[in-house]
Length: 228
Image (cartoon, rainbow, N blue to C red; front, side, top):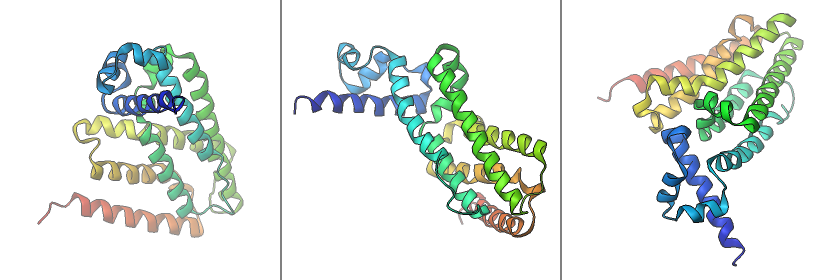
């Protein structure tokens, strides 16, 4: 039992730190603030983590593991727009859970070599996955693109997906964590990313996208209407 106590404390520190980083931004949170919120002494915190970067890196290990699983999930057959939309929603949920990495990314990379190297790999894996998706749709004659267009489209989709939630924070920082705002942002991200494909879609894929778009815009309109 004595061996489990430090592990529980460590996990609580990581969970609380993630919450604080997400809510207030990693640069605004110190180890002193984390210790105060945990109601433990700074010395107790330093027993588990050498410094704040150690906490950030530990959170990143979990994030990277979850992201790796997301980026290696097999499509399970030929991709459909419905599948891609649902997959994107799961990706946005993951980014939301660790949103401080994306919102504070420039600051983090400027002083954390580990994150600098690993985030570059994550972005590379994202682009590779999107290229595979585009090529599969191209082979099914559902996406009318050439090699250069696939490269450009893949990059634009990854950039939009990676920074969409940060953009939403800029638009509405005071209500950013409200459930309705979050749900709207996640669905909106799926639409924005897939809309980049719209000019190139053909046949059934185009019909599916238009059906998903109509449903999304209807739900968006209903949310925007004031309660009677």
